[in-house]
Amino acid sequence: MRYVILFLCGFLFSLQAHAAFIEGLEDVPVMEGLTQLPNDAISFGNEESRLVEAILESDTLSFKKVQEFYKSTLPQMGWIYQGKRESTLVFEREGEVIEISQESTKPLKVRITVKSKM
Image (cartoon, rainbow, N blue to C red; front, side, top):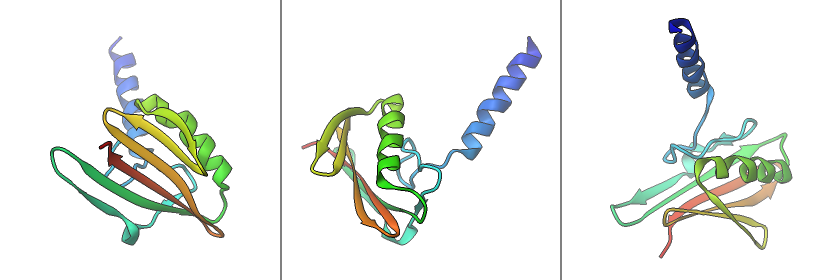
């Protein structure tokens, strides 16, 4: 039994070590193949509200694949898919909204914004 527990702890630790998350958003993963552009990040807030925005880039992915990834991944983290507004995916969770939109195609640039609902 002790070996099973040690194995599970090691497995979970290795998952966390390989998972990349958006800077400032500890529970929003960066899809494999996307890279966060550090100079394009915005983050500010207080106890009542926050705004975090990140730009992710890829030379190989399509926005369709990005949409599929976040539509399947974010609900596992408590985000509820609200649909699309034009070409922007919208999710809500506990008084916050996350919007995922395409900024350009070559290279693919994706804007992810988390803001408090007003």
